[in-house]
Length: 167
Image (cartoon, rainbow, N blue to C red; front, side, top):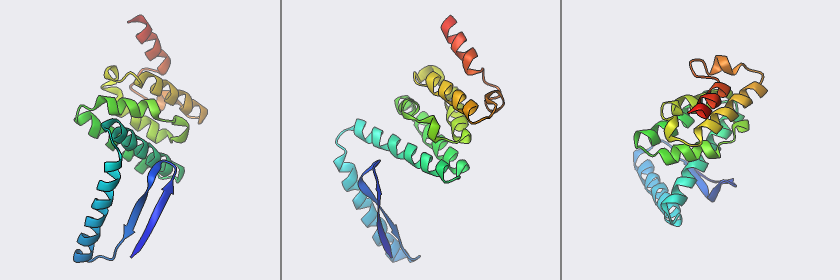
């Protein structure tokens, strides 16, 4: 059995990871201990806003780390899972906050595309969507890729800006 503290500036207090041999009684014991640790950590977050911000930060940090390690498919899946979960619960403010907080320079093109495509259908309910799309479009260009190809079926960020200006 190994206990480690994952020290990361984004996680306060440190996250604990436990690796346990495959034994049902041992697993139940440690699962219970981890649930108590999580409950203690959650109790330290006093407001719903703090909990929301912590969840968004944890998601983005995880996605950035996966992308940095070359696990782009997993990163995109985590990004889209967070977004789809929030949208299915009509938690548009959470999805919008993720779009407002994301640093596209830390994302792979796959993660950017997943983020933009999974929020496109509700973009009118997400004030941060247009900037996130524009930033993603520009970042894809900086990566030397063609955003018209990657965002196929969607208006270009410039066309989207022009359409919004005329409305």
